[in-house]
Length: 190
Image (tube, rainbow, N blue to C red; front, side, top):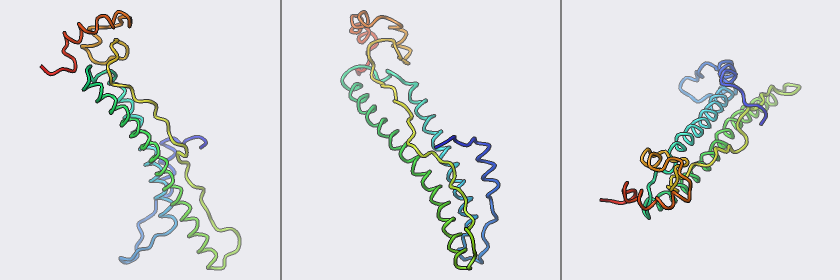
């Protein structure tokens, strides 16, 4: 995909495409302009959907090393990492699908236009619209931070862990880990 249109450019295009609701006396009469407008609305939804995934990953990445320590929290952290990664990959794939819907609506409207043009015996090329600019490559939202406690203060968002260990070097953190685990009772029930 070339450059993504800005929010303002997309809003302007959508406003230009907006049509009055069809009045078919209770029937079903969808005209190409309605499909073009629907295509623009779906395309805008794709961009919003993509932004939501970026916000989600940013929010999740604020919680590094927050699972605690011990077998239970470590197991939970491993499952969390696997499931969160799959969830984000599925979300990225679904972003592509939404773009496909927007392009498909425009192509359908173009085909309606061409069929109508041909059936009325019109000469020359039928009127067509270029499909909307959509996200056409699977987005990469990045890796979700591991919530497993590694024993150092790096990337630790828990005040107890970062306060107790701060920026202690790894070799010293390994020595202090049993004392910190006992003192903070991380991952253990009383």
